[in-house]
Length: 112
Length: 112
Image (cartoon, each protein chain N blue to C red):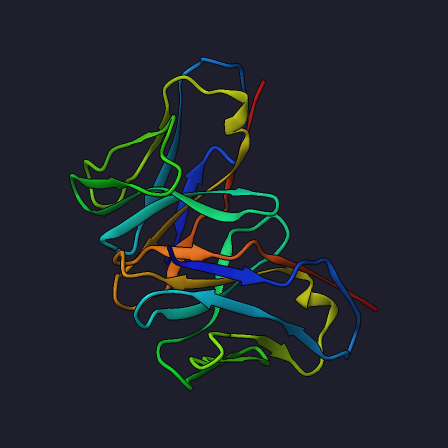
């Protein structure tokens, strides 16, 4: 079945460092891909998305490109802030109309 | 303000005592779903609903029930909770085809 694999965390970075979180997927067809972010004590929020190959999603300085050839959707940010400390989830929308398949999540901790 | 509201936020209960977690959305979304979040497993879908009176099982439905009598509400029912249902639960809604799911703030359930 469809699945999403994320790099394990926690990832600890200093402020202004470069962040990459790897995400690869297995799916039939051409799923839409998402990154969701969960700040402490809150629900998940959509960070960015891409709906077809080579699309680049971007928001709040984060970017991810839909790479069909490597089945990947890696999240990047050039200069992280303490406020970026959160858990990041990669997800894909399966053929089951609206169902999201999530990765395990990657905790990111940014220190001053 | 567009939102998904879950109640309660925190709940401690005993094995076998029926409970209901409520979920309500004010965005007129057709699609609603329940997820549970467990460490290392990400979010897994419990049940989903494509519209009023239309519900179906997700990946981990055992021990749960749902109903969708009104478009805005989608309660999660645990008829006889057990300790392995201790988890963090999220309700989500979306306008299908747009791909963005809106999540509630979560319900932390502990079954002793």
